[in-house]
Length: 207
Image 1 (tube, rainbow, N blue to C red):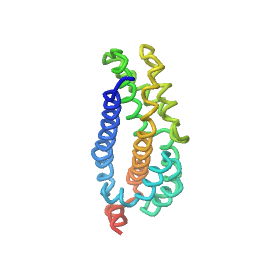
Image 2: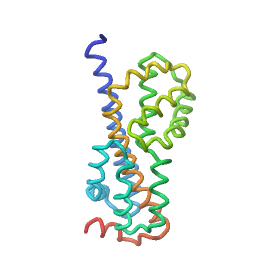
Image 3: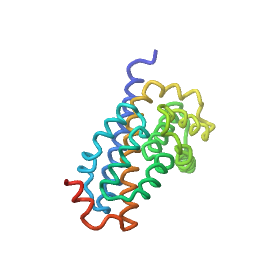
């Protein structure tokens, strides 16, 4: 009904989301991992099986047991992993937060709804809250998006239908970013707590 151009805009949203997620992983999480003494490239190779599992299931929760074992093998204590990783999968959802903010701004643009700077900041804060706990069920991110859209009353809730067709394709990016981020969070806390002596993480990743 709206022509191929409407699909082009959705493809552009997907491209922007994945570029943002890659930049976040490479620049922000990569810097944190370097501080902890590891290499992002080798870390990603180390958890490649878990990444593929999340890619297939579209949920980071499915890789939780394997991630806990692998982080302990890198030198993190069981207590640190047992606290940081499950908590992170509920409260530290980097990929979901990126998706929510970009999707709501996209819907605002699609419906010609102006957002001033204060509304954009309020939207970001709302996304930080509504993203909590959305990793457990496949597709929960879309329900969370509905809750986030409602924090901006001027955006019609019916506009969510625009994103139904592409939400699944961005779900993998959300879940994989969450997985990578929470694993690096556990390594950072272990470094902070003195559980990873200098050179230990790099040596074990090389092995």
